[in-house]
Amino acid sequence: MRLPLERLADASAALSRGEEATEEQAWTSARDALDDADRVLEELRGAYRDLPEEARPRLAALAGPLRQRRDGLAARIPAPRAVSEGSAVHDPDEDEDPAGEAGATGAGPAVS
Image (cartoon, rainbow, N blue to C red; front, side, top):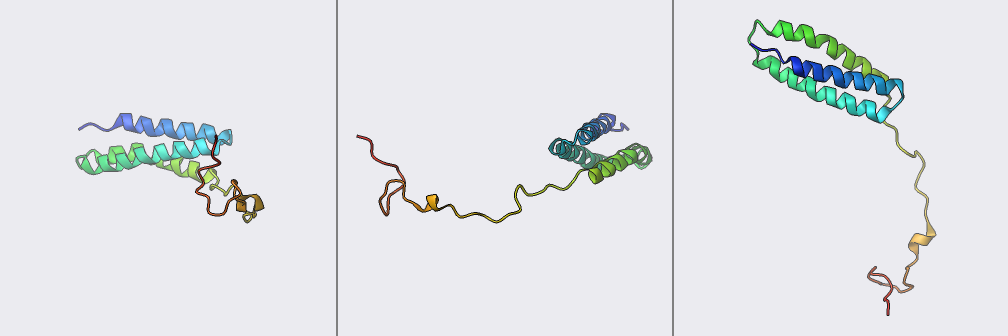
């Protein structure tokens, strides 16, 4: 019976990266680290199912605090926001045919 200690360390490292990024308000980096931690925690859930009965409580005891850190980190990361909340603005220049011809193929003007 081998507990996946390396994967537990990987999850902890990803959470540490996320926590540091959160302190710096680097939200994209924090979300990426959270995604990494989530992937590792999902792998650990699979490993849990494959462990013998007597090993499962040990893994649960080690992974439980990681899950709490993950949940705390997720709560501190703001939800992604739209770049702009306004409506699209019509640009009349986009209506003009650059070649000045109706029905042009968009290949651009011919060069002689």
